[in-house]
Image (tube, rainbow, N blue to C red):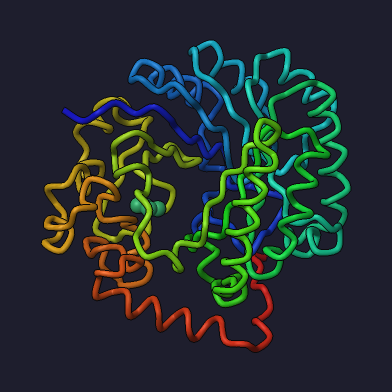
Length: 358
Ligand code: FES
């Protein structure tokens, strides 16, 4: 019997006013017509709570693009779930925020594209977005929501790390996630433009180390380094089908955000089969669960129960084989492919322009 999930990410919609080049949503987005209704989401939230889920992350796209966001938060709270809204802030008026507060929304994770309006608006592909976001951040602070700032960092903004930390303090965030771009979904189309250099990453690590000590008790800093520069892979999703699951806007139940890039897997829908059955019994959730499926290299490795062979979607994206060891691993034959990509994409020339979705 599998462990029970603790967290669920609900991608309420793929609609979003921004067009970030590092968007991790799939290259083919789900349209509005295919999105679940309010009642369908509420049913999934109840099923998730019954299954053992404690934390619900309401994401997108931009979740505020759903007109029924308030009803969805209310339903999640009635199901007994801790609710975290992952948002760009665009579409959150003061009145909406007050209503969400009254409905019991527990936490807000606000994304920032940069610390300067010109850069942030260019990255987000949305003129005026930075100023609107700063107003939303003021209202979030006024209402006293626990706030995490989510700063996605890459070649163009990683050197702004000190100013990004200052921004988090100024906005009253309790936590900042410095998340270097993970190359999934649309971000793969912009890998060469977004890939930071090894020197940038080394400087960032040192800055984070010093700032974490300096700001202890004031600001929690979570740093997600770009794993292409790591020696060992991350334990993606804490292990496939172990502690978390994602629901796509149309109700498709996924073991991780990018699982649909793995072509041999078929995913079931929460409107057609109980969530608990999908979690425990579906072929997709059992495909890479645990360690029995691991290739020989990982089976005999002392990190077998640390990283579970790494990220299946990264093995698929880089090597075309979701059953291979994550190519980040120094012991993996796939590492040469990754090193080759890095040397091609971080040469000292101007990076290519961003490719936007539209
Ligand atoms: Fe799918 Fe890592 S994103 S396993």
